[in-house]
Structure formats: C-alpha cells, structure tokens
Length: 211
Image (cartoon, rainbow, N blue to C red; front, side, top):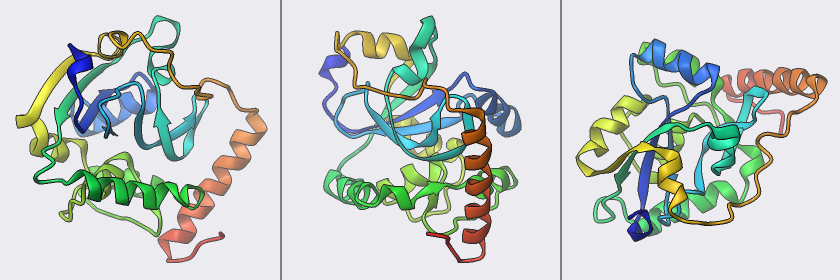
C-alpha cells in the first residue's frame, strides 16, 4: 500500500512529547506538528523541531526518522496529504529546502514565534522557523501561515492516509537511517544551550545575530 506513494506529501503529527500535548491544549487542535516528505519515503521527513529528546527548547532543521516517534513500542497518529505539484512545483520546493540545508547551522527554531502564534501573531525573526513556518516557506506559500490548522485547511482535500505512523513505515521493511535523537544530552549542555538559544532568539527579534 504505502510503497506505492511516490509523490510529495505534507505530514501532520500528534506527537507524544509534553510540549506537543501543551500545543494541542492551547490550539484546540488534534495535531501539533508538521513535516514534509518530498520523495515518498515516510521514514525520512524534514522539519524544524528539537534535535534531542531531553532538550525541548533548542531546535532547528531536523531529518525525522521513526526513531523519534516509535522507540520502545511507542506510536503516534499522523495525517498525510498529497502535495499538488502543479500548484507547488517540486523543483521550487527542493531549491528552497536546499537553500536552508546549505547553511542549516545558521537557522534556529523560532521559539518566540511559537509562543505568540496562539494569539494569531506572526513573528519571524531572521533565519528562524517554527515547523509550520518552515513547511510554508518550502512550499512557497506567501500568506500568513502560523498554525498547523491553517495548513490542514489548505491540504485536507488531498488526504491520502490517517492513522498509525508505525503502520505507515512498517510496510517499507527498511533499515531506517541513523538518528541520534534519543541520545540524551548532559544536563549542563542542555541548560547552557537553552540559554544561548533564547539569547539568540532575543537578538534576532531585534534584527541582530551573534553568528
């Protein structure tokens, strides 16, 4: 079934993290996270999110594998919608994605934007993205998109799957890419890294950067 999927997709996720549950409470939405699958391989998604399981604030560009969501028998619910490449050309999406990946260390998670987005405020400092802003940017959407629900309204008509992420990727019978997401970082590194991340967010909010 799933192996027949060869196109580009947007994936909405109901993640099991504490922050994910908080986002769903605040936004009154079933899903709290979104990613892109530009090659039909659902075991390798791209998004903006945390990089390690015990470091919830620091974040940036990530390649998401099943390790992030399915470790120790866990599972999450996902909704997959096909991207109409007549409306959102694949070449443009790949070009914008490659622009980010060519200098990905200079991009960070938009923590300030995420905090104010439930108030319908769009705040996008220099080289920062939430997962929603990242997906909208790669798609080339120019409108004010700040919530998962807004993206769902655009793509729901193209839904091709909704259900277990484990069932979605199990059919590949594939050795998934390496992923160090579950490698817990030292507490000192998390504290110092979080402080620097928040400092960098504050700087970029005023049009500056420490990089």
